[in-house]
Picture 1 (spheres, rainbow, N blue to C red):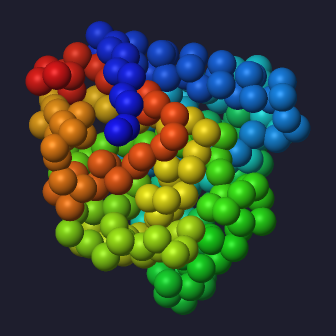
Picture 2: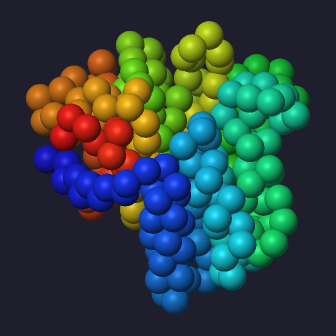
Length: 237
């Protein structure tokens, strides 16, 4: 049974500060034991402020390998690109810009399937284990219960044989880590904010909830899942 540790912040600003602090502490702790830190980050609006705070934190960023948990199959210059969002926040300047960023290849490879295969090869090369194990994965939670690009009722939910797959949701094709790779991470954090997420968060914490309706339920690591949420999102729990 998945164990959840829920920590609440008063608002989105406090949530960003809490998340930045916890991510910083995790990076420092792990790099005291090994040479490199593998980090997968989510896109979306919730982590934006967190990444802006992290970019100014003095860490050994050159020892940090940064990936995305998922990406829309669009040009890297498209306004909806998660890679572009990272380049405008964490990677935009200061200490954070020294991190080693591995964007998910997209339209240059001709099809989402080709992109997913290339992304699988990339994480297999950088991360250790089968499935590859990230030191930390930061996830979001959609108001429909999706996480990464694992959307309700889609084939991606049943993809167990590869490390990355094609996700389809909200009218866009995407490339996403599979649930088994996400679950293999040493530490998983969900960042959840805003009143629109309160029903999805309640369902995520419900042991009887179906992964078909709430795909975030597929994330089942051996360690506890840390959920960082603001008061609006936590209203029903």
